[in-house]
Amino acid sequence: MRRMYFLVPDPGTASAIVDELLLARVPEKHIHVLAREGTPLGNLPEAGLAQKTDLIPAVERGLGLGGATGTLAGLVAIAVPGGAVVSAGAIVLSLALAGSAVGAWVSSMIGVSVNSRRLQPYEHEIEQGALLMMVDVPAARVAEIEQMIERLHPGARPEGVEPDIPAFP
Image 1 (spheres, rainbow, N blue to C red):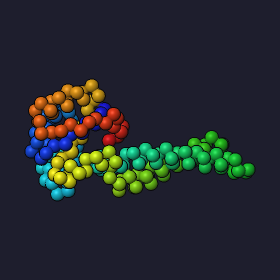
Image 2 (tube, rainbow, N blue to C red; image 1 turned 180 degrees about the vertical axis):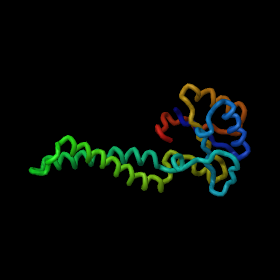
Image 3 (spheres, one colour; image 1 turned 90 degrees about the horizontal axis):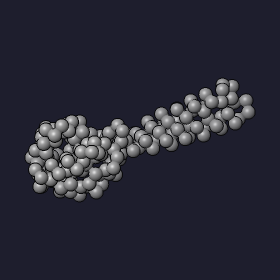
């Protein structure tokens, strides 16, 4: 899947684009609209926490760092004489899993409170009243969808494609 970004001038244009995307068989759950606070979106699919915040990258970092810390703690625990009453593999594995869980949880709490770094280039336009549309499509359909939007809605400005979106956006 690839995430396509479009800047759209107004909610009416965004609504027309959403209708075209739905007719092109892009599921509504793969369409996200971000607007300035207070902008009435009507029936447009509003971007959720996963799109607005740094939640997903933070969880990914937390899993990795927590797992590494847990593994290190497990290795230290088995190196202490008399500390390894249970099998060494079980200690290391359980501490690695516990570290991953705690790391993901703590970093998700931080990530949900931080605006997404991916959206920083668009903040100025959004504050000026534009809407940012994020559309998740299979890689094979990127060119087709981009051409369709450019052809039918010249006011929509393509802003690029993210090479990869998280597995659980």
